[in-house]
Image (spheres, rainbow, N blue to C red):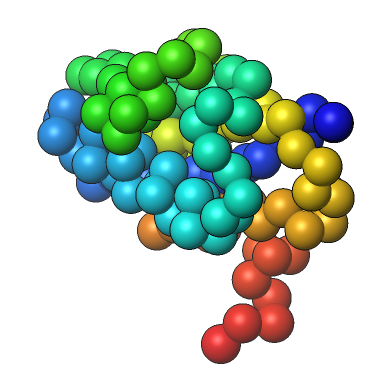
Length: 124
């Protein structure tokens, strides 16, 4: 079995715990729907990052709220890049799977679609 990386990101309007946790749950739920073969017991680990303007909650708590109780989770702060997308939550999921990388679907929600315009160029 291979370890694959699965990416996603979303944004929030305000640095409030309920917004960070709600947006993170929404992101993880979309990732699960887009990749139905992914089950929490097959996840090796998850890295969440937040832009420096988000400090009120750990997004990993949202994964725990979804039942990812045995998955190793880590949160970190993004490097402060000039003109970076503000109030952004990113995730990198390390997943044990035989699914080819080309059949793994990243999810970018809200303003985070700007991070990967190549994924959305042909969608109307």
